[in-house]
Image (tube, rainbow, N blue to C red; front, side):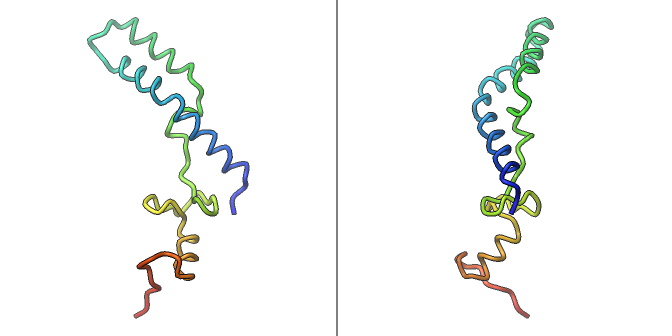
Length: 101
């Protein structure tokens, strides 16, 4: 089980990223538009730098929904390999069986 502070920090980052997503997208569109004057694009870049650092989506860490483990994460299932194996062994995941050969 991961530290609850790490999980909560990640949840705060998710909330901030969602809150500032529209503003960040608008400012990024302005900075990439080469038809606008250089001063306007630079001003947008400065405003983008003023946004909270944790509002950037690339600061969000994929974590297991069950254990909070940050590594060996399956995006499709939103859980780590250890949690997946545990649930599969208990028969709680439909269609998944333990392999044997």
